[in-house]
Amino acid sequence: MAVLVVAAHDGKTVRSNVANAVTAATQMGPEVHVLVAGSNAGEAAKSAAALQGVAKVLQAEDAAYTNWVAEDVSPLVVKLAPNYSHVVMAADSVGKNIAPRVAALLDMAQVSEAIQVVSPDTFVRPIYAGNAMATVQTADKIKIVTIRPTNFKATAGGGSAAIEQIGGTGAGGLAAYVGAELSKSERPELTSAKIVVSGGRGLASGENFKMLEALADKLGAGLGASRAAVDAGYVPNDYQVGQTGKVVAPDLYIAIGISGAIQHLAGMKDSKTIVAINKDEEAPIFQVADYGIVGDLFQLVPELTAAVDKK
Amino acid sequence: MKVLVAVKRVIDYNVKIRVKTDNTGVETANVKMSMNPFDEIAVEEAIRLKEKGTATEIIAFSAGPAQCQETIRTALAMGADRGVLVQTDAELQPLAVAKLMKAVVDKEKPGLVIVGKQAIDDDSNQTGQMLAALLGWSQGTFANKLAIADGSAEVKREVDGGLENIKIKLPAVITTDLRLNEPRYASLPNIMKAKKKPIQVLAPDALGVDVAPRLKVLKVEEPPKRKAGIKVKTVAELVDKLRNEAGVI
Image 1 (tube, rainbow over the protein chains, first blue to last red):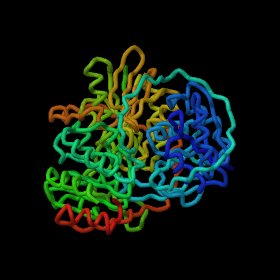
Image 2: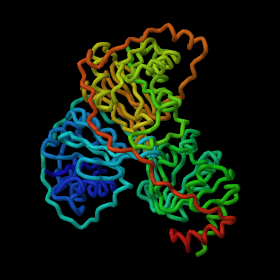
Image 3: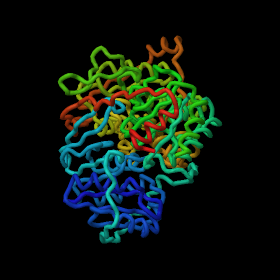
Image 4: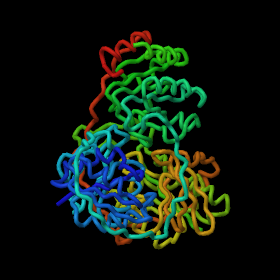
């Protein structure tokens, strides 16, 4: 039986993490289909059809799907699910919202944030903020799985799967999208950035994050923050890296003024190279950092920004 | 309007957990247990709704071993009115908890259910959404702000790109994110008062719910350890290492 990947998209292209979800899906079954639901989702469907490993794209046109309202998208997935062995979504805010609703409607268990596919019914997933790894097996007929995108390589483009139009299921009237307050940024998106610069409580104010912006822009990096910095109001919630924020695994992660609470480490410890700048040499962040500098970040960060400039 | 909040007993967030040597799970014997932090936020939000006059009664629900009564007592000391414990020593997974909650919701008929968005032990982030599905209710997940008016709720949600506003019909299930509120500490007089508040104890069988686990845990292991690296003295040295040793800039 085939595996169904449910793809979130922005109307033009599917989210970049769909390419990771497809890779995970190819490890679960012999054939991968991608569901692209929305209004005027044609372009997004084409972008899904171009992903290597995708055999078929199902495009469901319905105005009810425009803003990913869980109450309206779930019935569509529930209708399609019996034809599949697995339903897979990336564990982002769309997948986390919709997948459990689908699972319960089908009376199936869900495996959350799988980081490894051991076999089609067995997965590894982090528990306790990544301080333990559980290997779980599900006997349920339809396996509902969300995957952590950073743990699966993105599949390449260049494919040309067929796109099949399917009908929508309409709006249930339970919930309506009103609007969004999205952060506008020219910087790379955190979860797909090659380099991430992150700041913590040590920055002492939102104003001081400008210093980090300067460094991030020099490096072409995404900008993140610890929970402490977000809670203190220095930066918006979508900057948060950690167990309950975003999980990132860039080539280079620079933690500045971040002590390294367990829940923060859970969100970045799979980074290839970690740099820590902190005035407290006992800070736990140094236990995971490849390179650490103990010192005053207000002096070191501008120095670093100047130094990466001259190659 | 009655409000039901769910409170889960978990290993305290300050405890550094230990994986059992036989790889069957995580050591919980003689470990400090507390209310799941996201559930504290749920209890606080319910209390604020009561203080505003929106909620009339707050029921704190938990499921698990007898010791979950302590977790319910904490909710009662914060300001919940009474408790319901579905007592069982069986392993409970999110779908089973959602079914138990549904059975209690069917009896109690609250207008709103508030739960933490995830528990810090299994990190599933499922129960609220599953409960909403089983009830056929709307769901306001990862709530950053909640406003109740005229049979509907306006929920500001924490999403990948920032915040999203939705309007959902009541009854509804809300799941709390970190910044919805800052939970209060229970005062000593309220802790004393909470001892007299009633807790109803039920069995899963009495609710007609099969709680058998669907996921089999084959093993639990320590994550691969990351080795601490080196400390460098100067920014110049750091840049040199990043450029020539790690090759990342």
